[in-house]
Image (cartoon, rainbow, N blue to C red):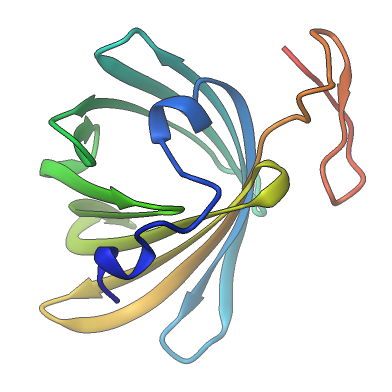
Length: 176
């Protein structure tokens, strides 16, 4: 895919708008054979200050493990972004057009007591009603190791502070 393929598609995806505030995500990682290896939820607190988007991501995995990742993302011109987070090797780079964003970076993935350098190639596609689909291909030396599929949802605009945010899986989470 090329980011230019999404030019003019709606709704427009601007990360600094979509992630400003509370977001919840549900995801899974499938290995290269299509087997689901891990499932997770992520609660994301985002803040856009006009220059920097800070995302605090709190992961809960199906085996009970938890993880926090904090992203600092800066807009580097029209439709271009750069970001840093713990575990990211170097700088993550993103390009946006229409309802899509391509986000790519190298990451130090912990496997037991060692760390493996892998590459993430994320494609985020904003859908109507505040839902975003993210497909990330994870590779090493050009060989695909697997894919992560993540669905992000913002509370409905009608939800007032303190309202109940109802994810698709039926769980209830108080909106912040």
